[in-house]
Length: 190
Image 1 (spheres, rainbow, N blue to C red):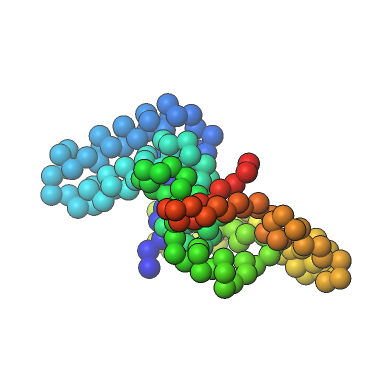
Image 2 (cartoon, helix red, strand yellow):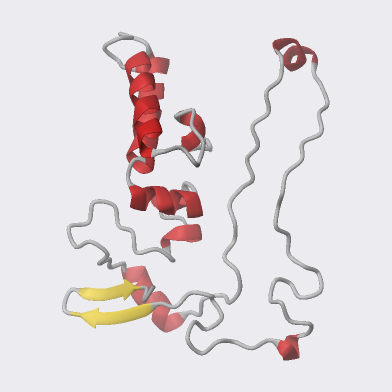
């Protein structure tokens, strides 16, 4: 299983980069790795595809927002983001989405209350060539959110103190569901 590289890292930009910076770096890298400029170079072709994919997501404000919030999970259908977002890539119906699994899950299962799982922590570390060959030990500092042993992420001192919101059922997100002739339409009031 291969993990995808961070789109910001691929385009050599930061999360605070402007749309012009995103476009500028994309054009520079696309020109460098374009298959016409690198005939019969499979590695350059793969980098060009990777750069194009990153630009497709980061140049669209809605897709960028989803990527910033959920990472790659926002677009691969994994449980982390897709069940909380109404994003359907290329849908002619906008935010309308229908998934038969949603229909059955709403009737036969309960969604787990509590916070949504986070994404992996990524840290870029630059080392010298000699360090890579001979090895080196470095200390890396990062910030991470961990689950509290006392409240297990609920904020309550004990099980008896837990109050489940009637609107969101403890998920922290309000979700509206409408049955239509075309299926079920999920939306967020925000």
